[in-house]
Image (tube, rainbow, N blue to C red; front, side, top):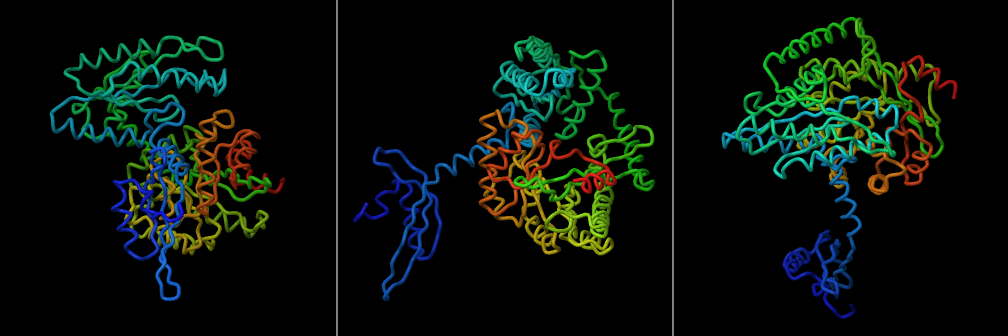
Length: 509
């Protein structure tokens, strides 16, 4: 290489761009490609610095091979758009592509059909045979769905045993029925798992565009409603959405009223799930999880009611209540001397999209702290990836305001959305929480190992604290700790507990 100009190594089509970068006469970073002696292109990062020595300008160029980094980013990007188990589109990617296809169909006057598929009695498979066999069933079903559909159709997994399909290029409802019969046929074939033949059947709800809705969320809701009607009819069947099924909308209105009453009647409470340091097992904090003690239905988790709150501004009142309760609890723990080894217990609170997008949200948080007497250092706010990318213009400023109040800001469920680690460097963040869907496949799944290790190591390299959710086994704990993951949360550490039970648990440690 001695005596050769650096440009001689650059690919021909990249050379003009690199020349321009070098001409700028300052320190710049630039990604390009060099040509190996065998003719292959190698992606590299150029770091060009201009120095002056004894009145003479010198240029120093550092060339860094970035193949491993790009490969890791590609894997993470794939996981951001696809379900980690089946490889199908995840919820966010499916909804985005569905919205585009709906716009196209509206312009062309075409029909689409959304199928919401739920496997009957799948929970029984998981409970009786275990999650590994359950995962095998889900993988087999996803392969059969893809094999029975055309390349133009969309297939996704929304989580658990819920699959969604968007059918395109339809001439009539008769075309939809043909596909439905085919899907029932292929899914009903027994699945082999753990050496046994397991019989699973699907219940399918159908919503047709544009007859049953012109918005993606509306179609999803109607197809979901129809799916539950199919289950009620005896399972292993399909049901087209009918307007009479919209009675569920009335049920939502009732639930909304009950939510409002629940707030005034103090029916909500926070449960707390402990978080510990991966290396020592020492308590480091807790995540606050909302629960509703419904007077008729008993103790309810958020998935039973939060979807209604999120459709209305009721979510703002509920979200502020959670923050105020967490802040008051943090102060009480401080006064009671309930701390961990490094000081006051930090409580993590989940934010809703509506809260974060609210003008003056940081001012609301400041009022909560002032009213409760809590310090910002005692609270952590968790945001999803999707919340960050949907408000890219204002998110950095809001995050900076929150951190200026002393709060820790973390990205929750990382890997399930669209945020790349490179994008995270542009945001004022403190922590990254790896979604439990990755952790659940450790330590046996080699692919999950590669992705999770890459996320942990790259996040730590960016100066972020990394917390793994859903840790259930000592093997998972050991593996995550060996990769540099600093905090752990999950059933192995402790399940969510009411405040009094959590306090007793902490004192007993």
